[in-house]
Image 1 (cartoon, rainbow, N blue to C red):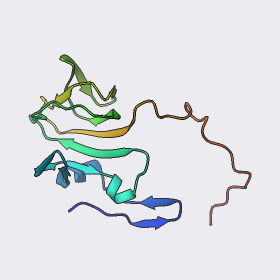
Image 2: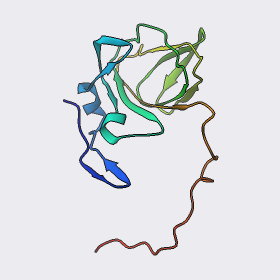
Image 3: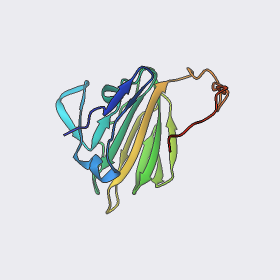
Image 4: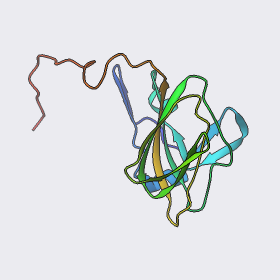
Length: 152
């Protein structure tokens, strides 16, 4: 069973999605494939109410592969590989992925990937509209003039 938000406030929402081993039990529905439930995938948008990005946590089992190529209309994707290894293909170029690999794919990049190892491949995918970032790094943030207080 997929998790739900634990707590919500005016400016936040919190969910416990479990450790990465819990990700194996999640399933996601994909609008483009309405009759298919994708195992090992959890979209965080419906849980947290995300408004400027989509994020999913994923587990691709050992020996498994995404059985199709796909592109996006507007979203670039950032893949953050946390554990395991495999291969990723963008526009027919194939390269190795493993723990610590960070990969950006533009909307028009034709992509697929596989886990050709003997252990599960865990990763996070972040989607956002290409060229929409308003500022680099911490330039969008600002300090709030208030002393930090933690209850004892």
